[in-house]
Length: 194
Image 1 (cartoon, rainbow, N blue to C red):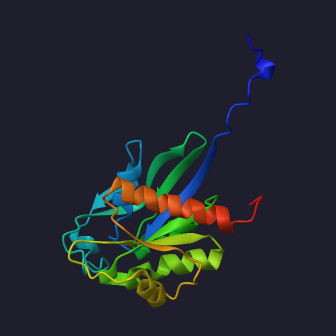
Image 2: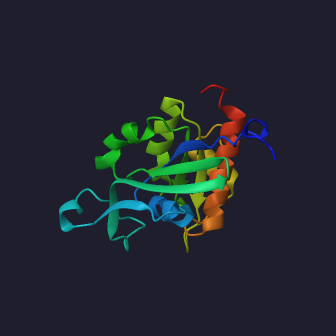
């Protein structure tokens, strides 16, 4: 019979806080919901006529709700690594929350929509200016133009080391692949001890 002292130490469980950011209607809530192993926390509200003057529905005219605070989900990548996902609100009037949500985060996924590529510039600028590593997921919407990742990288003026990948925010495996890409990027580019 093995004594407690001779048993291998239990695996340390690491928890990483990651953000999912991007413009209004790019699929942040959808991505968090698709990959989360728990019922995600969502703070969505109906779009109303009161916001019609400030909500740009170009390219997303069928959208009926918006995130007003955050989305939250959790995914276990392996027994020792758990990701806590925080989806940011995409509308400019809620950007004041990004600093609070970013506190303690190790990295981010920035979702991009080729129909409205300029909507992800604020998220890219936010993470670049704060030195928070990020990857870009080009969410492949039905009937949206498809461009090679090199063209998207150039259009967003991203540095060559920032990973860019096509994804489908509705698909769990595609979303998990994007998160794995981010974790791998963090392991390669974040200094030890950070």
